[in-house]
Image 1: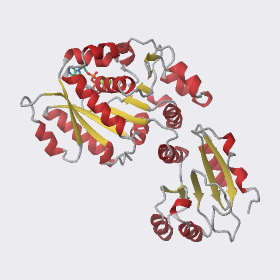
Image 2 (image 1 turned 180 degrees about the vertical axis):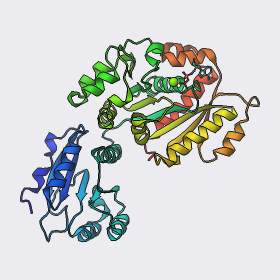
Image 3 (image 1 turned 120 degrees about the vertical axis):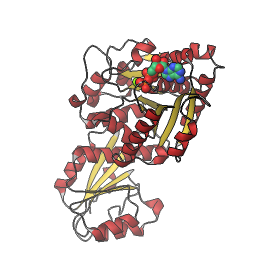
Image 4 (image 1 turned 90 degrees about the vertical axis):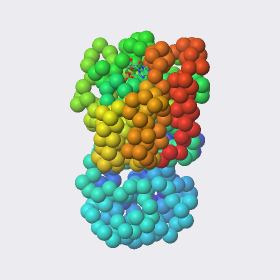
Length: 395
Ligand SMILES: Nc1ncnc2c1ncn2[C@@H]1O[C@H](COP(=O)(O)OP(=O)(O)O)[C@@H](O)[C@H]1O
Ligand SMILES: [Mg+2]
């Protein structure tokens, strides 16, 4: 076994609080190098390779400090490797993602008992691996209280339902009322209008941040996010050039999300209606997804369709989805209880109709919100922001 075991991990004095340590382990070098090159694309990650010689079954043997994540490539003697990990008490096991060269029912059964974070079966693409590692490290950081922003994504069931207004109102409430460092991200690449409503000038935005994401750190990222208010910044695609979804890789998007999550306490994302490569990266990673609809049969039909798609295609748990009924009126229009009966397991929040308060929310202006502090809509937005601020351990 490698005599210099602990040199794989950064010494404690060199670690930054947001740093995560990944140990990559297996029997042969080539697959481990592929794994290491892939995770190197993530910021604030340090990784080391540990080759396990034949006969040695415990990949964590002799370590005096556990990594945050064990990335395990299971080849020969895979069963005994899993069994030796199972012998360790749970508190002496890091989070584990295992990669299998081929499906093997016996190994899958043993791995299921160990409740590994994820089991991937070859061929594993770089995108898939980065995605799984990012998700696991988000949880590690949240558990350790190290990172970490909560990511909340807003999406409408039909255009005009109010997703942009509500995401802007929530971002403002989190920044002003809850005093949380908040980033509002406008992901509508073509018709995003938050920079217009908030009146901030976007010289460099999402496009440039994605182009140079490898060189960015928390300090330089600020150049791409103009400040709207104290504690509140905007990152937006709106700028001189059009950004098309297929110009961007999902790896870059993952990297940028990781950096944004390191740079704030709340990341509030205003998503466009359609699901594509970029929006699905956000949806899969968001702690909470808020679907915004109105009280009409058409909105309900579209909303149900969208929620089924999130659950069936993107494997998103119901507990992460929340419903907001906007422009809500009691007694009038389509009845609220029809919505509650159709989607009985979702948390539902109601926002009343108020033209002026909606304009103020879109502008993200705290001064204007204070003037309208007593309006029902401002109060409803504060309540929603409160539940989002409280939802640290959602998944
Ligand atoms: N509860 C509301 N009361 C009054 N006007 C609203 C309300 N919600 C949204 N609006 C207005 O409706 C328009 C569309 O809202 P927007 O947030 O852009 O919808 P979406 O992003 O879902 O397409 C905006 O002009 C906004 O000010
Ligand atoms: Mg919108």
